[in-house]
Image (cartoon, rainbow, N blue to C red):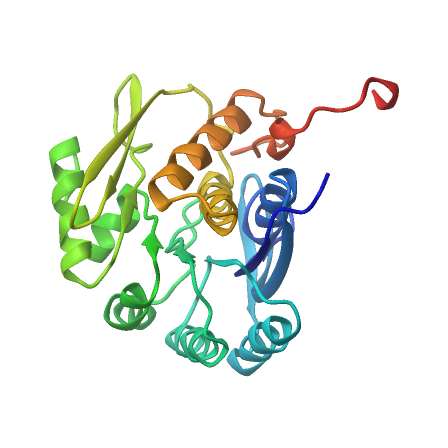
Length: 270
């Protein structure tokens, strides 16, 4: 397989392998691209929750981004867990210094088990500074509620929250509808010119650990390969849905999804 593009991932590490940098690398690789990383934090976690979080110094995060990008130029960038305002400012500074383009922001705030992964000051900096410097922001409903202060209970609420994010400076918004109670899963893509709703059948399972990380990385990969943002979202959602359908059922809590669902293994290696 020929490598299609080069993706830089800025995110935290998940020791259980289901989310964070590990999910990002698996997603990018499975979709045929080359993954590079800047690690923002090291966590000890499993499918039942997060035990500890060790932050990486903001200067070292800056160094990872700038030094890596200077040598191998990324075609797109995925940003995940940014736990403090210092880290956000450092990431923003490094993006500008390296003149990085095609940036996807997954505003990671709370782990599946409920552990908070970002402080309140950082949320304000993310809203005021970072959102306007990325191409797409991909919040789930709880994250969109925190960012917009809008209670989301319907598709109409999702649209209103997306418009509020556009007012905050976002260029494109994808709000993920997985937290709504419905038979169908509806994700909404919005910018100032268009609104698109991606509808898929909801899969009844607790094994969805890392879906947000996986989706944003998949979108970054397709976008880095030259697809439009809207098409990248559509293809990324399809990849994640297939990963949920073929989940391996590992662990005692919120288990991981199957990042290898895009692979076709040669018969002699089965």
